[in-house]
Image (cartoon, rainbow, N blue to C red; front, side, top):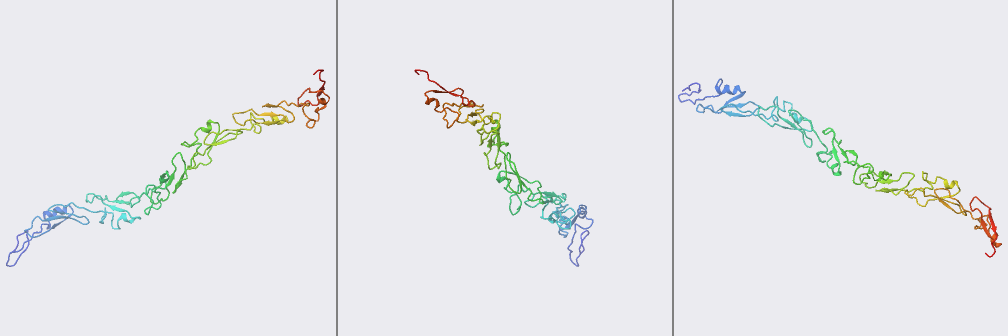
Length: 355
Protein backbone atom coordinates (compact mmCIF):
# COMPACT_ATOMS: atom_id res chain seq x y z
CA UNK A 1 0.00 0.00 0.00
CA UNK A 2 1.31 3.46 -0.91
CA UNK A 3 0.24 6.76 0.66
CA UNK A 4 -1.49 9.28 -1.61
CA UNK A 5 0.49 12.49 -2.27
CA UNK A 6 1.26 14.81 -0.74
CA UNK A 7 1.54 12.17 1.98
CA UNK A 8 4.50 9.83 1.74
CA UNK A 9 5.04 6.26 2.81
CA UNK A 10 4.52 2.63 1.66
CA UNK A 11 4.24 -0.83 3.19
CA UNK A 12 4.46 -4.33 1.62
CA UNK A 13 1.29 -6.30 1.89
CA UNK A 14 0.05 -3.97 4.64
CA UNK A 15 -1.44 -0.57 5.23
CA UNK A 16 1.34 2.09 5.16
CA UNK A 17 2.03 4.61 7.90
CA UNK A 18 1.64 7.83 5.99
CA UNK A 19 3.56 10.98 6.79
CA UNK A 20 3.01 14.62 5.88
CA UNK A 21 5.78 17.18 6.49
CA UNK A 22 3.82 20.40 6.68
CA UNK A 23 7.13 22.30 6.42
CA UNK A 24 8.15 20.66 3.15
CA UNK A 25 9.64 22.90 0.53
CA UNK A 26 7.17 25.20 -1.16
CA UNK A 27 4.53 24.46 1.46
CA UNK A 28 2.52 27.39 2.71
CA UNK A 29 4.00 26.99 6.21
CA UNK A 30 7.54 26.85 4.86
CA UNK A 31 7.04 29.91 2.69
CA UNK A 32 5.48 31.88 5.58
CA UNK A 33 8.36 31.13 7.97
CA UNK A 34 11.02 31.76 5.32
CA UNK A 35 9.46 35.13 4.46
CA UNK A 36 10.05 36.14 8.09
CA UNK A 37 13.58 34.74 8.20
CA UNK A 38 12.47 31.90 10.43
CA UNK A 39 12.76 28.12 10.17
CA UNK A 40 9.70 25.92 9.72
CA UNK A 41 9.50 22.87 11.96
CA UNK A 42 6.83 20.18 11.88
CA UNK A 43 6.71 18.75 15.37
CA UNK A 44 4.98 15.51 14.29
CA UNK A 45 5.05 14.43 10.62
CA UNK A 46 2.42 11.70 10.95
CA UNK A 47 -0.28 12.38 8.42
CA UNK A 48 -2.80 12.20 11.22
CA UNK A 49 -1.10 15.08 13.03
CA UNK A 50 -2.05 18.22 11.17
CA UNK A 51 -1.45 21.93 11.94
CA UNK A 52 1.31 21.20 14.41
CA UNK A 53 4.03 23.02 12.50
CA UNK A 54 5.75 26.06 13.96
CA UNK A 55 7.95 28.94 12.89
CA UNK A 56 11.18 28.98 14.95
CA UNK A 57 13.60 31.92 15.27
CA UNK A 58 17.09 31.46 13.89
CA UNK A 59 20.06 31.58 16.31
CA UNK A 60 21.08 33.63 18.10
CA UNK A 61 17.44 34.68 18.33
CA UNK A 62 15.10 32.59 20.41
CA UNK A 63 11.41 31.84 20.15
CA UNK A 64 8.84 29.67 18.30
CA UNK A 65 5.14 29.89 17.47
CA UNK A 66 2.78 27.03 16.67
CA UNK A 67 0.98 27.59 13.36
CA UNK A 68 2.36 31.06 12.73
CA UNK A 69 5.24 33.51 12.73
CA UNK A 70 7.18 33.65 16.02
CA UNK A 71 8.01 36.74 18.08
CA UNK A 72 11.78 36.47 18.34
CA UNK A 73 13.92 37.54 21.27
CA UNK A 74 17.68 38.12 21.47
CA UNK A 75 19.56 38.79 24.68
CA UNK A 76 22.21 41.17 23.35
CA UNK A 77 24.28 40.95 26.53
CA UNK A 78 24.52 37.15 26.28
CA UNK A 79 24.57 36.32 22.60
CA UNK A 80 27.13 37.09 19.93
CA UNK A 81 25.82 39.13 17.01
CA UNK A 82 26.38 42.30 15.02
CA UNK A 83 24.21 44.41 17.36
CA UNK A 84 25.24 42.57 20.53
CA UNK A 85 27.65 43.66 23.23
CA UNK A 86 29.78 40.75 22.06
CA UNK A 87 30.45 40.92 18.34
CA UNK A 88 32.98 38.11 18.55
CA UNK A 89 35.74 39.56 20.71
CA UNK A 90 34.08 39.29 24.09
CA UNK A 91 31.45 41.36 25.86
CA UNK A 92 32.44 45.00 25.41
CA UNK A 93 31.19 46.00 28.87
CA UNK A 94 33.49 43.44 30.50
CA UNK A 95 36.60 44.45 28.53
CA UNK A 96 37.26 47.63 30.58
CA UNK A 97 38.82 47.85 34.05
CA UNK A 98 36.97 47.84 36.30
CA UNK A 99 34.45 45.74 34.37
CA UNK A 100 31.03 47.21 33.73
CA UNK A 101 27.69 45.41 33.88
CA UNK A 102 25.73 44.73 30.68
CA UNK A 103 21.93 44.82 30.68
CA UNK A 104 19.38 44.52 27.86
CA UNK A 105 16.16 46.31 28.83
CA UNK A 106 14.19 44.93 25.85
CA UNK A 107 15.16 41.51 24.43
CA UNK A 108 12.78 41.78 21.45
CA UNK A 109 14.53 41.52 18.07
CA UNK A 110 12.66 44.68 17.13
CA UNK A 111 14.67 46.54 19.79
CA UNK A 112 18.31 46.11 18.87
CA UNK A 113 21.45 47.90 20.09
CA UNK A 114 19.64 48.97 23.25
CA UNK A 115 21.95 47.15 25.62
CA UNK A 116 23.62 49.26 28.29
CA UNK A 117 27.00 49.27 30.02
CA UNK A 118 26.66 50.36 33.66
CA UNK A 119 29.60 51.43 35.85
CA UNK A 120 30.35 49.39 39.00
CA UNK A 121 29.85 50.88 42.47
CA UNK A 122 30.92 53.27 43.82
CA UNK A 123 31.25 54.88 40.40
CA UNK A 124 28.15 55.97 38.49
CA UNK A 125 27.30 56.14 34.82
CA UNK A 126 25.63 54.20 32.02
CA UNK A 127 25.82 54.29 28.23
CA UNK A 128 23.77 52.64 25.50
CA UNK A 129 25.53 50.25 23.13
CA UNK A 130 29.01 51.33 24.25
CA UNK A 131 31.31 51.49 27.24
CA UNK A 132 30.21 54.16 29.70
CA UNK A 133 32.41 56.94 31.06
CA UNK A 134 32.26 56.48 34.84
CA UNK A 135 31.93 59.24 37.42
CA UNK A 136 33.08 59.13 41.02
CA UNK A 137 32.03 62.04 43.20
CA UNK A 138 34.34 61.51 46.15
CA UNK A 139 32.23 63.92 48.20
CA UNK A 140 29.11 61.76 48.13
CA UNK A 141 30.62 58.32 48.60
CA UNK A 142 31.45 56.99 52.04
CA UNK A 143 35.08 56.27 52.74
CA UNK A 144 35.69 52.54 52.89
CA UNK A 145 36.95 49.49 50.99
CA UNK A 146 35.12 50.56 47.82
CA UNK A 147 36.64 54.04 47.91
CA UNK A 148 39.66 54.60 50.11
CA UNK A 149 40.19 58.07 48.62
CA UNK A 150 36.64 59.33 49.22
CA UNK A 151 35.82 62.18 51.60
CA UNK A 152 33.00 60.52 53.48
CA UNK A 153 32.15 62.82 56.39
CA UNK A 154 35.59 64.48 56.52
CA UNK A 155 34.17 67.84 55.41
CA UNK A 156 30.54 67.70 56.51
CA UNK A 157 31.47 66.26 59.88
CA UNK A 158 33.44 69.45 60.53
CA UNK A 159 30.69 71.77 59.33
CA UNK A 160 32.37 72.36 55.97
CA UNK A 161 31.26 71.85 52.37
CA UNK A 162 32.83 69.31 50.03
CA UNK A 163 33.57 69.81 46.34
CA UNK A 164 35.00 67.34 43.84
CA UNK A 165 36.19 69.42 40.85
CA UNK A 166 36.84 66.39 38.63
CA UNK A 167 34.41 63.60 39.61
CA UNK A 168 35.95 60.83 37.53
CA UNK A 169 37.46 57.49 38.46
CA UNK A 170 40.81 58.69 37.10
CA UNK A 171 41.06 61.79 39.31
CA UNK A 172 41.16 60.70 42.92
CA UNK A 173 41.86 62.49 46.21
CA UNK A 174 41.23 65.88 44.60
CA UNK A 175 38.17 66.75 46.70
CA UNK A 176 38.25 69.97 48.70
CA UNK A 177 36.84 70.95 52.08
CA UNK A 178 35.71 74.59 52.11
CA UNK A 179 34.81 76.60 55.20
CA UNK A 180 31.28 77.96 55.49
CA UNK A 181 30.93 81.79 55.59
CA UNK A 182 31.68 83.90 57.48
CA UNK A 183 34.73 81.69 58.05
CA UNK A 184 37.24 81.26 55.22
CA UNK A 185 39.69 78.57 54.22
CA UNK A 186 39.93 75.35 52.20
CA UNK A 187 42.09 72.26 52.07
CA UNK A 188 42.54 69.42 49.59
CA UNK A 189 41.66 65.90 50.71
CA UNK A 190 41.40 66.93 54.36
CA UNK A 191 39.35 69.22 56.63
CA UNK A 192 40.27 72.89 56.29
CA UNK A 193 41.64 75.09 59.07
CA UNK A 194 38.86 77.69 59.08
CA UNK A 195 39.60 81.28 59.95
CA UNK A 196 37.64 84.46 60.58
CA UNK A 197 38.91 87.97 61.17
CA UNK A 198 36.49 89.17 63.81
CA UNK A 199 37.43 92.77 63.07
CA UNK A 200 36.20 92.62 59.47
CA UNK A 201 33.83 89.64 59.47
CA UNK A 202 30.13 89.50 60.18
CA UNK A 203 29.34 87.08 62.98
CA UNK A 204 27.78 86.93 66.43
CA UNK A 205 31.15 87.31 68.17
CA UNK A 206 32.58 89.85 65.71
CA UNK A 207 33.49 93.44 66.62
CA UNK A 208 31.26 95.11 64.07
CA UNK A 209 31.75 98.90 64.39
CA UNK A 210 32.46 98.93 68.15
CA UNK A 211 36.11 99.98 67.81
CA UNK A 212 35.55 102.25 64.82
CA UNK A 213 32.76 104.14 66.57
CA UNK A 214 35.14 104.77 69.48
CA UNK A 215 37.83 105.99 67.03
CA UNK A 216 39.98 103.03 67.96
CA UNK A 217 41.70 100.32 65.94
CA UNK A 218 40.42 96.73 65.93
CA UNK A 219 42.89 93.83 65.96
CA UNK A 220 42.20 90.08 66.01
CA UNK A 221 45.28 88.39 67.55
CA UNK A 222 44.11 84.89 66.57
CA UNK A 223 41.88 84.52 63.52
CA UNK A 224 41.30 80.79 64.03
CA UNK A 225 37.61 79.90 63.89
CA UNK A 226 38.11 78.18 67.24
CA UNK A 227 39.28 81.44 68.88
CA UNK A 228 36.26 83.72 69.00
CA UNK A 229 35.54 86.86 70.96
CA UNK A 230 39.27 87.64 71.34
CA UNK A 231 39.34 90.81 69.22
CA UNK A 232 40.86 93.93 70.76
CA UNK A 233 40.06 97.62 70.56
CA UNK A 234 43.37 99.50 70.63
CA UNK A 235 43.80 103.23 71.17
CA UNK A 236 45.39 105.26 68.41
CA UNK A 237 48.79 106.85 69.15
CA UNK A 238 49.71 108.86 71.11
CA UNK A 239 46.90 107.39 73.21
CA UNK A 240 47.63 104.04 74.82
CA UNK A 241 45.34 101.25 75.98
CA UNK A 242 43.54 98.17 74.69
CA UNK A 243 40.62 96.02 75.77
CA UNK A 244 39.29 92.63 74.64
CA UNK A 245 35.79 92.55 73.29
CA UNK A 246 34.93 96.21 73.88
CA UNK A 247 36.24 99.77 73.35
CA UNK A 248 39.26 100.50 75.53
CA UNK A 249 39.74 103.27 78.10
CA UNK A 250 42.42 105.33 76.36
CA UNK A 251 45.10 107.17 78.28
CA UNK A 252 47.88 109.63 77.45
CA UNK A 253 50.58 111.10 79.71
CA UNK A 254 50.71 114.63 78.36
CA UNK A 255 53.99 115.22 80.16
CA UNK A 256 55.83 112.57 78.14
CA UNK A 257 53.82 112.14 74.93
CA UNK A 258 53.87 114.30 71.84
CA UNK A 259 50.50 115.66 70.82
CA UNK A 260 48.65 118.92 70.19
CA UNK A 261 47.49 119.17 73.83
CA UNK A 262 50.73 117.81 75.36
CA UNK A 263 53.34 119.71 77.38
CA UNK A 264 55.91 119.30 74.59
CA UNK A 265 58.83 120.51 76.85
CA UNK A 266 57.11 123.78 77.81
CA UNK A 267 57.78 123.16 81.52
CA UNK A 268 61.24 121.63 81.19
CA UNK A 269 62.47 124.41 78.94
CA UNK A 270 61.53 126.81 81.77
CA UNK A 271 63.36 124.73 84.37
CA UNK A 272 60.13 123.43 85.84
CA UNK A 273 58.77 119.91 86.20
CA UNK A 274 55.60 118.58 84.56
CA UNK A 275 52.86 116.78 86.43
CA UNK A 276 49.89 114.95 84.88
CA UNK A 277 46.97 114.79 87.37
CA UNK A 278 44.85 112.55 85.06
CA UNK A 279 46.04 110.56 82.07
CA UNK A 280 42.53 109.79 80.78
CA UNK A 281 42.07 110.67 77.11
CA UNK A 282 38.92 112.54 78.14
CA UNK A 283 41.01 114.86 80.34
CA UNK A 284 43.36 116.76 78.04
CA UNK A 285 45.41 119.95 78.56
CA UNK A 286 45.39 119.37 82.32
CA UNK A 287 49.14 119.05 82.70
CA UNK A 288 50.79 121.29 85.31
CA UNK A 289 54.13 123.12 85.38
CA UNK A 290 55.52 122.90 88.92
CA UNK A 291 58.28 125.16 90.21
CA UNK A 292 61.45 123.46 91.48
CA UNK A 293 62.04 123.58 95.27
CA UNK A 294 62.59 125.67 97.24
CA UNK A 295 60.50 127.89 94.94
CA UNK A 296 56.74 127.40 95.06
CA UNK A 297 54.06 127.72 92.43
CA UNK A 298 52.30 125.76 89.71
CA UNK A 299 50.14 126.50 86.68
CA UNK A 300 47.93 124.40 84.40
CA UNK A 301 48.98 124.05 80.76
CA UNK A 302 51.51 126.88 80.94
CA UNK A 303 54.74 127.93 82.62
CA UNK A 304 54.14 128.77 86.28
CA UNK A 305 55.19 131.93 88.18
CA UNK A 306 57.59 130.69 90.83
CA UNK A 307 57.72 132.38 94.24
CA UNK A 308 60.97 132.47 96.28
CA UNK A 309 60.45 134.09 99.73
CA UNK A 310 63.98 134.97 100.85
CA UNK A 311 62.64 135.91 104.31
CA UNK A 312 61.13 132.48 104.94
CA UNK A 313 63.84 130.19 103.65
CA UNK A 314 66.88 129.24 105.76
CA UNK A 315 70.35 130.16 104.49
CA UNK A 316 71.10 126.44 104.07
CA UNK A 317 68.59 126.35 101.20
CA UNK A 318 69.20 129.85 99.97
CA UNK A 319 72.58 131.63 100.18
CA UNK A 320 70.93 134.98 99.45
CA UNK A 321 68.19 134.61 102.05
CA UNK A 322 67.85 136.69 105.27
CA UNK A 323 67.78 133.85 107.68
CA UNK A 324 67.49 135.33 111.26
CA UNK A 325 69.22 138.57 110.44
CA UNK A 326 66.10 140.74 110.84
CA UNK A 327 64.36 138.78 113.57
CA UNK A 328 67.51 138.72 115.75
CA UNK A 329 67.44 142.50 115.70
CA UNK A 330 63.76 142.61 116.54
CA UNK A 331 62.86 143.70 113.06
CA UNK A 332 60.60 142.37 110.35
CA UNK A 333 61.94 140.80 107.14
CA UNK A 334 60.17 141.68 103.91
CA UNK A 335 60.96 140.18 100.47
CA UNK A 336 60.15 143.09 98.21
CA UNK A 337 59.73 140.84 95.13
CA UNK A 338 59.20 137.14 95.79
CA UNK A 339 59.61 136.20 92.14
CA UNK A 340 62.15 133.44 91.63
CA UNK A 341 64.13 135.64 89.27
CA UNK A 342 64.47 138.43 91.88
CA UNK A 343 67.19 137.49 94.38
CA UNK A 344 68.80 139.39 97.27
CA UNK A 345 66.05 142.04 97.47
CA UNK A 346 64.83 141.34 101.00
CA UNK A 347 64.98 144.08 103.60
CA UNK A 348 64.71 144.48 107.38
CA UNK A 349 62.00 146.85 108.52
CA UNK A 350 61.75 148.42 111.95
CA UNK A 351 58.77 147.55 113.99
CA UNK A 352 56.46 150.50 114.66
CA UNK A 353 56.32 151.73 118.32
CA UNK A 354 53.70 150.06 120.37
CA UNK A 355 53.40 147.23 117.89
